[in-house]
Length: 481
Image (tube, rainbow, N blue to C red):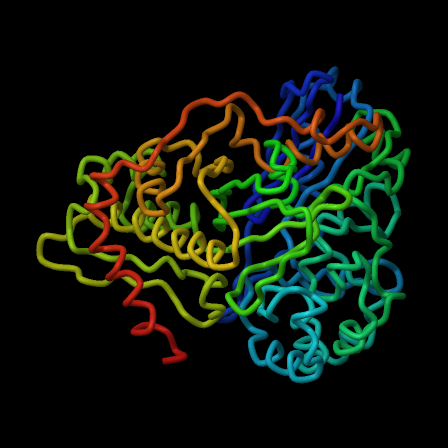
């Protein structure tokens, strides 16, 4: 059996797969995000460890004792700054933190070849500009930095004592030469850092170390190998068999991601498309990233007094598609693709006297769908063919929302059994590859299809006017205007 652990933003999920690839145990533990100032988003690194231990210990002890390997997945881009004793110097600055926009511009000026080397435009979500911000605003902290780790790799350090990372997660730092799959001295130097402060790089299916005796005892399992794993999106892709050139998925978690596996490095930075290493050797991927997706559902449920997402979806379905003129721009934490705008914020537009909770709920479902449609369009502009998307993540539970998503993006959605397990599933499969070897195409197979949703031409037509209005609305609300 193999344990996969996903260090997410809102919680940690642990799953165990048996040799046949079936989920035989699961555990979760919640996390919270701190926002002490506008644009800031931070977490206590030690909260990841407490939540990881709680999630693992929630799995049946007999299952834990049978684990033969562990893989890690996690939220990308988080800056975890450690001193010489490997203790955090400050809260980790997360992927959806927007404070370092000016630092992005400074880094691009300092390294004119940045987009060529890193394959991406500098954005506040990436790790590198966060370090420039710390250097300039918290110099006493910066001077004490001995190591910079990504969130899942801080958990790895506490598990094994090793400072290691995988290439898919590290590609999101803006310090990697993504084509060469190695650290870039030039990009590190632009932030005042060196390779000595970076973890050792591994492919996602390689072993980085062994669970320590203390942690093995705490978790009730043997001292098993630990695989490098992957960033949450790459690991999620591995979990649902998106491992061959052209395979694609839609991840509906806190953020929304459209992910396409590629045989070669194909950057398109000017359209805010991400190009990263995949979690498997010799593979890369493209992504469009939307900072708020399922998080918008939780938000509107809270402000309208719904008991939770299920009631929110029921309200929206009762109202019906395009039931009112209301538009929702889902930029609660800014936006990456295609706007690269950390300062823009969400908005409701075109409200009237008949606007009610149902129509607001429907507008939110449509707004997230329209933002994802923007991502599909820029990926297609980059020469990527997208006809169907496998769907994973918590947002995959609603069939009604799926109908809106398929119509807005004009692609077929393929829902997979167990797809809501997400990146932890891929982390477990990477552990299986690391321990047993084998062909990823054989080990990382897609789960059985639960159902498919093809774009409904009538719904495509019904949403067309609102989709066009959505695309005209962004310039009216951005501080860049």
